[in-house]
Amino acid sequence: MRQLNGVYTQKYNGRHDRVGHLFQGRYKALVVEKDAYLLELSRYIALNPVRAGMVSSPEDWPWSSYGVTSGMKPQESFLHTDFLLGVFSPSKVQARRLYTNFVTEGLDRESPLKEARGGLILGHAAFVDEVRKLIEESETGEAVRAEKYAARPPLSEIFAGVDRDDGIHEAVYRWGYKLKDVGNYLGLHYSRISKIAGKTAKSKT
Image (cartoon, rainbow, N blue to C red; front, side):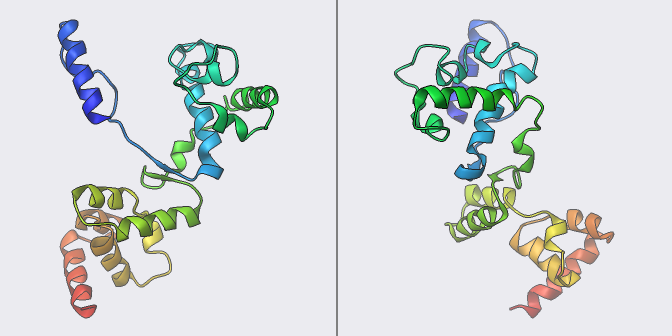
């Protein structure tokens, strides 16, 4: 996706004699717990153009799959809607009606992305823990480390119910938090955090 966006932006800028970014923000992917959050995300995506004030109804946005999924527009050969509609009902007619109602009811709801842990994992606590374990067990490398740190728990969770020094060791060595960030959280200078982290590292080896 990064390559696709980059090449498209270069071609677009060249064609229209412009420079700079074309898309807002970088492309990113989430690990989503299917049963709990798939429907919420499908609704959120369909309603984005409406919330942005670009259209009055989700079916009016020409680049959305909502029109086809709801049955308001003809089926496209490249677009598969059976899985999503099947969550609502085995009857396609009833499923489309229920899906349309579901999307409409979401206009006043907040973005489900706010619940994503580390901006990467979206799901219940048990699901988040399972994904974290898989990331930790993955091969080392920059990409894996980036995912691991994006999925890390907040400092408040790391220090909950544990000894301070153990929490510092966990935050720094397991989850890659910067000394300054840990220090700001605990109200200590980063040099103090460094000494504590070094001390606990020696005691654990």
